[in-house]
Image 1 (cartoon, rainbow over the protein chains, first blue to last red):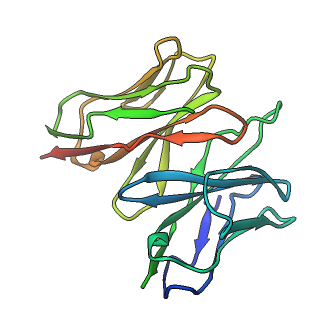
Image 2 (image 1 turned 180 degrees about the vertical axis):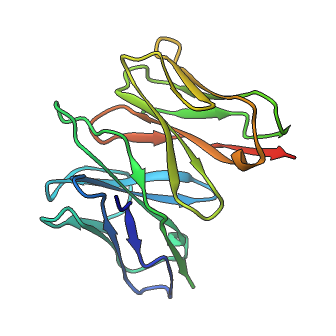
Length: 116
Length: 111
């Protein structure tokens, strides 16, 4: 069974540019969530999507956005990149349990973004 | 707002030792708690998931306990091995999507 796949694995951008990251969840998982990991702040929740709808959003500016497609694949976009956006961006997929709660999370290897 | 603290921040032990990693959280109204390991530059690997109604979960040499009333979870690793060297993270789910991570415990097991 294939795991969570994130592309690209590494990318370098300059300030002001925008970037799109992709996440393919485990087959059958309909919930996809995104996290930003930096040495200073640790892992921070960005947003979660379920059935193409954003269920929750973390405390990030509007430059960070995402979407989910009908096949559960998800993309996140960061516009007008800043130096502080350099981070490892992790995607996780999970099932959604009866009652709406999210089950066990399975993470991808991440996309490492460097902003120069 | 949920806050998750992991102690110690770093731990170095010789191979073969049994060890305990700690995770504490401020809001006891949780749905579940999950332990992960992360190798340098890699994603997170799920180790154990404990639902709020459970007291512990076991997988191989790993045992995780949960005490909601005191806001604590522990991860016990038996007979540690050099391959266990990694950063261990706990994450607490307080709502449908709200997941809060601790900063992690960096473990080094020496041969």
